[in-house]
Amino acid sequence: MQRREFLKTAAITATACSTPELFGLEQFEADFSPAPAGKNAQYHHLTCPRNCRDACALIAQVEDGKMTGITGDPAHPLTQGTACVKGHTYAMHLYNYDRVMYPMKRVGKKGSGKWERISWDRALSEIAAKLKEIKAKYGGEALTEFVYSGNEGHISKTIAPGNFFEKYGATRLVRNPCDWPRYVGTPSVIGTDFSKDALEIDESDMYISWGSNEAYTAVHWVKFAHRVKKKGGKIIVINSVRVPMANQADMFIQLRPSSDPAFCLAVCKFLIEEELYDKEFVAKYAMGFDELVKECSLYTYGELAAMCGVSVDEIKVFAREYAKAKAPAIMHGDGGQRHFNGARLVRAVTFLPVLVVR
Image (cartoon, rainbow, N blue to C red; front, top):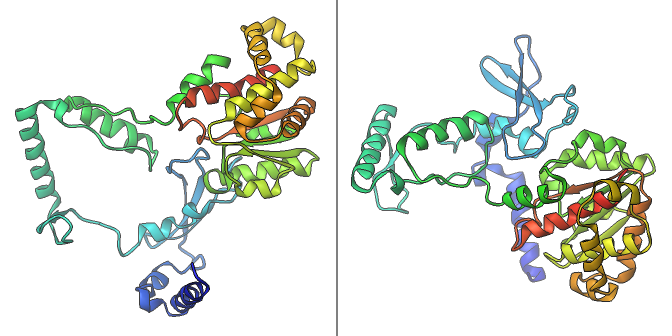
């Protein structure tokens, strides 16, 4: 962008902020401005159903049947009185003037934007007739669900659509294709796809953000990381991009995308050669250790460092700090598994806590 274009865009943005009616925002401000609690205010406890690992507990303020505010529940151990940006805007979403509230049927060509409002009875009967026609002509498998996450409520996501598609005999969709690498990779090492509870982070002295972007996808994890550092612990960020958490980290390791296995192998090599791993635990509980030792011997630190785009010193410093920590917590994000050989990537990361058990 040229400087002239930047200044022009900034001026337009500033004008829009000061003159909301230009963009149709006057109704937005009138509908969603916060209101102080009145005498008839009621408070309802609810759980955010968005696709997020935090599952925040929220408290909605309702007056005369309308939500007038929403906050995080201070009694919830994870939310602790705060909600993310999406949580704070639930009232805006609920009463948005662009929200579709009734069945609408297209009356023009696709893309023409011409719709008419129809009744629920008509909408349901027409949809049912079309579904019966498809099944009669082509069989139930001709219909497939095209849904993913969004709202994670058990009824809206699992029970209702599941029962419908099963009864219809439709082709079912693997609902979480991007998660299967974790479901395969992690259990192949530790027997389960689950590890620590987020609340256990308070017991850690090292927070390792690995392939995660907490500032956008798990905002409540940020305060746990800050607690670790406040108690004298360290924050380490391992990612292919410089996420916001990297600016607060004691060490940022920027790996080449999908090169995590090479980095993990280098760390394992250092832990083994420097005898920094938990020998007693490995001898008693781990299988395949000799194969890991052999694999480590096939590469030099220089070769592995070149594969993942970092220096040998970065690998060794991280490995030494990781081995020295009393309770390191690897908070592994979802990004790494959404690549070719994602299961192997997740599997490689899971090797580290097996070698360094606390």
